[in-house]
Amino acid sequence: MLSHKVLVPVKGDPADEAAIRLACNIAQKTKGKVYAIYVIEVKRSLPLEAVIDPEMERGEAVLDQAERYAADADYEAETELLKAREVGPAIVDTAVEKEADLIVIGISYKRRFGEFSIGRTVPYILKNAPCRVILSREPIPEGEVR
Figure 1 (cartoon, rainbow, N blue to C red):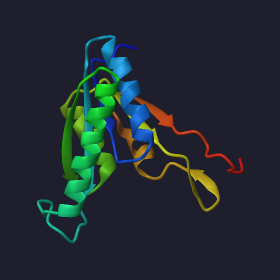
Figure 2: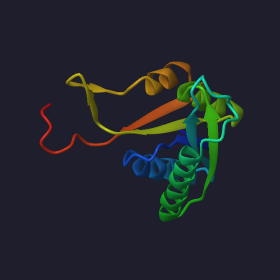
Figure 3: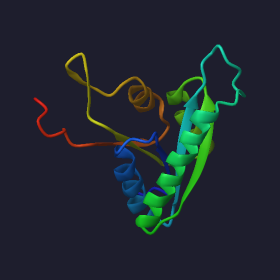
Figure 4: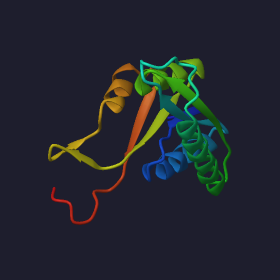
């Protein structure tokens, strides 16, 4: 699997580090590019251009951390802060725009209503992404019932 352009959506979870490192390792083989993106979901009651300072600051901090993870892997990641109504379509649209060969998504182990859940964004990406998608799930926390 040769990947020249790897897109990594980040959101400030511990799973981001493994996803960035994996993306860098894959991209290094082809001297490809790694793009880390953070998507701010803007409520429909606000204009898309609305300035949401706390969320903008959080996004910048998460992207700075993504750059550090990439640097730790001896690679450079380009970062971008996006605003959108929904995260999934923004990620897929960015993959199309950047002509990504691969999307690497880090997900934490979460339970909802007692069952493991991947939320609504990941299924949207899996269904609509124009390229390969790799999920990197964090291990089950110690003490969790399986």
